[in-house]
Image (cartoon, rainbow, N blue to C red; front, side, top):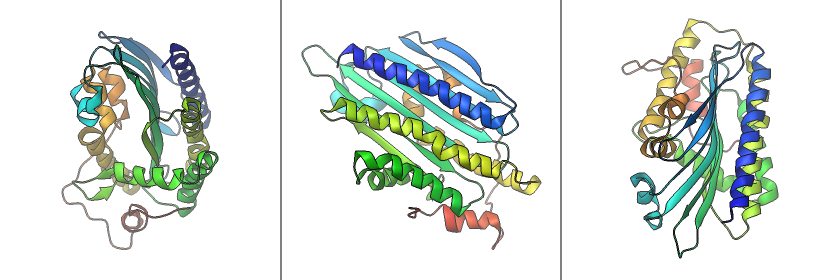
Length: 302
C-alpha cells in the first residue's frame, strides 16, 4: 500500500470529523465541541472533540485517531493470525451521541482503515465501519428512515451490500448475556479489502457521510418532544445496555485499550449518566414495553 493512499484516507477522515461536528453543533444550537489533541507514546495520536450539556445533546464525542506500532495486540492477532509479526497503522473516526431528551435516540458511527506490513510480504489492509441507532422510545417512521438511508447509500456499490451489512450489524450489536439487541441496527462491515482500493474507499466514504443524512432528521423530529422523570429514568436504565456492550463485547474498545490509546478518548462512548435496576420489567402495554416487543427484535425495516 502506497503512502499516498494513507494520506488520502487521513485527509478524508479529518474532514469528516469536521463536518459531523459542525452538523451536530448546528442541530444542538447551544453548545460547541471542545478539542483535545493527544499523542500516543508508542506512535501516533489523535484529535478528540466533545460537546457537553448542549440544548439537545447531553454529550457527544467525535474522535479521530491515527496510531501505529511495531507489533499487533493480542486481540487483533486472535481475530487475524496472519497479522502476527507485522507493524501496523490504524486510522479512524468514531463517534457516539447521547441526547438528553429520551425521545431522541442515541447513535454511534465509525469508519476506519487498517494496514499491517512486514518486509518481503504484501501489505494486509482493509476498511471497516458502519452506524447504528439505539432508541429508547420507538417510532416506525424513524426506523424506516434510518434503514432506508443505509439501503440507498449501499445501492451504487451492489444490491447485496445492504442486506449483508444490515445482518452483520444485527449480529454484532447483540448482547449475548441479555439475548437482546442493543438497538435497531443499521450497517456494520469489516475486513473490506479487494483489488479495487478506490471502490472500498468510496464505499467507506459513503457510510461516513451517510451518518448525518440518516441521523439529523430524526433528531430534528424528536428533540422538541415533551418528557418527564418516567422517560428519563427509562433512558438511564437502557443506557446501561450501552455500557455493557461497549465494555464487554466491543472489539474497537478492546483494540484501543490494548494498543495503548488514550483512555479518555476511547471511553468517550460512555454516557454521562446511567443506572441499573435489579430485574426491571416494563409495565405491560406501555411504551417502554413496546420498545422490547416491536423495535429490539430483529426485523426488516426497508
